[in-house]
Length: 364
Image 1 (cartoon, helix red, strand yellow):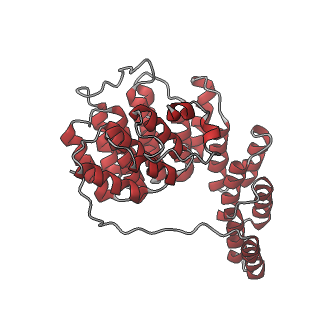
Image 2: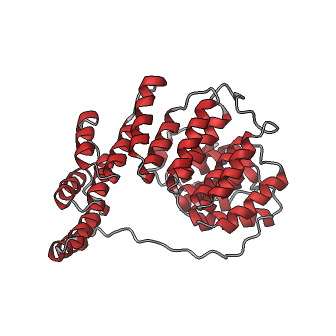
Image 3: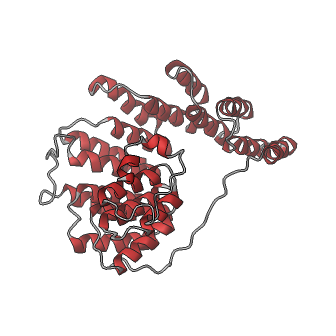
């Protein structure tokens, strides 16, 4: 069969070929498993039109194909399309599974719609999926991203309930579920600026008897950075190697640079970056730049912006930030010159998008 021959070609090659195997006149009978794999491949590489054509021409769309499409829309930032497709799926009479729910929750947090998220939470309870680890973690993450930490923590507490999940229960030979959901809730408190609660949860996790993993440390260090808890952040960073024998990664070092930069410890941030991050990449320079801009250090901001631009000449955010810091100290001519250079090069600042809630959706 033609489709089977094509799907054996590496996906990396598929993305550069103009295959038109999305019409029934080319493939009158498609194995659902093959079409689902191809659908995932299209969405993975952002080939939305090809994915939509393939999906529309599937003779028997099931919950698997719908779920792949919903999740794929979300991963490509098309959250409203994800919600529309989910509504269509429900109207067609198909019941969602856990993978569908996760996709819809990702879309809900992308739309920043707490009302829609609460509707999905009701469906989760109704279908008995609240004890599902993946769904629960996605749900508490959704509430956190929508700014509702009260609801996020309630979900977290429900996942810790011995009747649902034991704090010490090992699943599939991996980390305890408390750790997995704990990382998400710690990150949630961090992005919402409640570093003290994030730290309290971090130490509660340690008291459960299982040491935090690499992702836990990244979440808690980020939380300390957003809350300005420098001493706590540095203490926890040192605990990584001294107590738990976890080797810091570039991401962890980057969190410490961000922590020091945000707190105004700019010389320390630079020394730390140069000592531990040889060949400092653009992400670390962006953390430094944000700190320099926050504290009005024009000279260091120019150095950081120049370094980022050398490594990522197509980017514009660093130039906009530098323009803002020039304007903040009254150097309006330099600020205007920078923005004019962006227009001449065709590099424009990514526009912000506002979305009003209240769009009617039926989530069952």
